Length: 319
Length: 236
Image 1 (tube, rainbow over the protein chains, first blue to last red):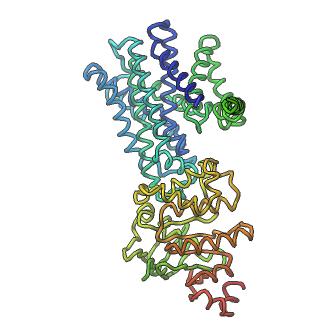
Image 2: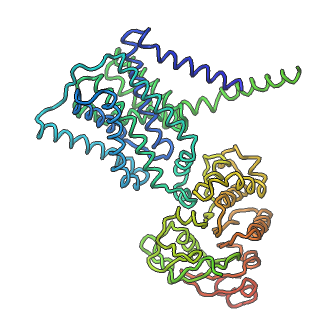
Image 3: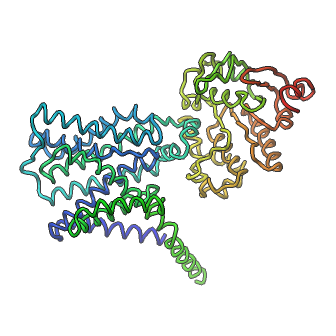
């Protein structure tokens, strides 16, 4: 019981701080916080398919690109909230159309296929932009202030965490996790594996679509090479693995740490970030297969908590 | 009355025909066994009945309704359940979560808690360990969990694929008692087993498979008495 109170209190304080940041912090801090929230939203929504079912997607960044381009295409035509919401919905539809055939492919082939598909989207768009529209990029004028964008990202990020949390606790989530452990047996028990994977994929695409929409307004200039950069997808995957994909707080930890690291390195040692990313990936795969969250839950914390619980019990008995 | 009727089923696996024109019936309330040497097509037969494999020809009739074209989940919805070979529990899920997946289909959701109590009654060990990751159970416990998970779907037809494989002899005896117990509760059982002595004792009807064909059939005790069949196909 005590632990739950502490947990709730910590979360409440965190939320309050997150809510107050644009009011009290400098613009620089706000922009760093915005970046962190954006990556948390990306990594957590990635987890809904990849973490729960084990279908590792290297195409999650493509939805961000689609969201960004959707906003650029309808900029100042539709009102802002509708624009953001529609960007997410468009991505859900794209995922639903692409997902049905793609999710029948398993294992490493699925990973490669998602990467290939996102590159396909990128080059199709480049072709369209250059040859049909005759442009290389898009500029967005009169975008909202960074404080406004911060609140949009905060809401989307919290929404993706809440969604992942609710799914994980639901029967649907259990079905996804059974698919991860043994897809054939899950089917033999009556789980319609094709359907649940498809739903998870469509849901997970909703959030990067909206994040892309907001980030396009933040960047104010977008072109296919940057918003469809496969590094986006790689980073999301590395963040999730660094934090631990078996845990809901894994991507949150991973995204926060890597974003802070990149802020630090870009400012002092530019170009070193990519190198660090590679080293971290190797380290995580070799020594931390369960990520930082796994490390925490395997080591000190439970021991300390148990100790605390035992002492607490004996105290109440004496009374 | 026949609960399950399989008519001239032919199945290919990776381009090779592994089942040839197999026909058999499972009477309602019975224990029916498929026996035969390794790779004689027993598991293939079960996987085809539950729908994991699609037959090239033939038909499967369950409760007087053709189910040959249905998806696996639709068959589970109608009361067919397979407990696969090698237990295949979900190692990273808890014991309780494994059981909950067992009643995933619509028909079983409402009664999940009753089913859970029933399974915990049958296997008190599972209740003790309900919050433990299933991968940490012993081999015998994992087999109990696999059967319990199957029972969670309240099956009319429970198919057990090699349930005694890799278990200690004491546990095997327990397992067969348990299977008879489940059958007495009205669950029809189709079983594939290596342990012939025990299987022939509990099965009312036995089909002998040899390289994908059904070569003999009879009552369990009949086959135990028939020296020719025992020698030729069962290696006894």
